Image (cartoon, rainbow, N blue to C red; front, side, top):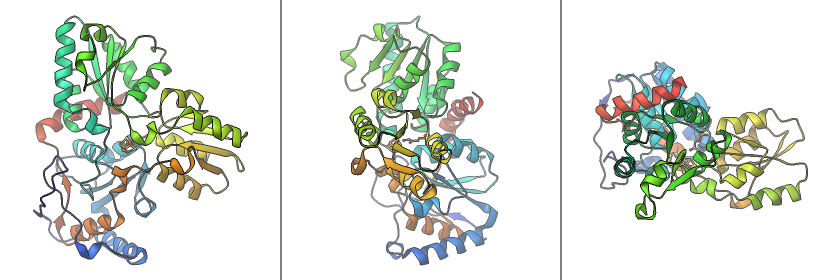
Length: 377
Ligand code: 13P
Ligand code: SF4
């Protein structure tokens, strides 16, 4: 493999918080799938074990097909922590690549093929905003013992903030264990940023009677001392892909397909989760369909690419999108275009690093504490 040196091909776009956003060169924009596959395979052959490609379950088929491991956020973090590869190419969104950078060793490099892959929900809880809310709540209730728990879908600075306040990170597959961990250490959980996952987890643990919401855009609307007295404080963030599902969609599916089962992601609203048969992370959704008997019908309430993968992977099961044509893809995940994957791999084979994710070292040290706590619960 050629000697690698960092590139400095910056553009004026500043959508991304790292301040550099390298865009796809024109020569890569219209590749045909056959040619692209050949080129990806050739670059991977040349790079060998130096590179591992990780892909989230929501990635496009043309990315998933080239991944060494495809999984949910938790599985991907574990893989990132375990790999010895010098380069981790992350088919996912910024917060996932950041976490991989935090978890991997200093001599490993994480590449996010397109820097535009930023999850809007992660942007709904900015660390500065959370810090201000924290000060307001803890000033009003100095004796309160609050433990912050942030969903993986948040930026590294918020993960670092949670670690600094004795908290941790969780994903959709271990939120209940993270809550239990927090309740062993405090009286109140402040959960960020997804109010639906937070509420669904509170119900799962039977602590739904004393839930308060904190709307960061209307802090005046709340009495911080009253909020601090709750068991669970929910930050007012949400995923627009999952908020779209309603209990009416579940009722309509059951009416049209009386034998249908329903599996949904816990980012869905409370009433959708209540109406479903199974709720779980994207990997639980995959396992549920993999374990289904031939001929069973399952309606899936999550991002549409995963539903399409499930149809392809399990043609013996009837897999339906829970809200039909209204089911959405995730605009952030979609930014990982397979042409970008081709580009970053070919550049790496030529000794050039593109779109490297590098979390500030001080922030990374603390964020790692919060992530390690998650990996241990
Ligand atoms: P999972 O952790 O279940 O893969 O979910 C990640 C995500 O972003 C869901 O919207
Ligand atoms: Fe973020 Fe929702 Fe996309 Fe998941 S599906 S990455 S929560 S926008």
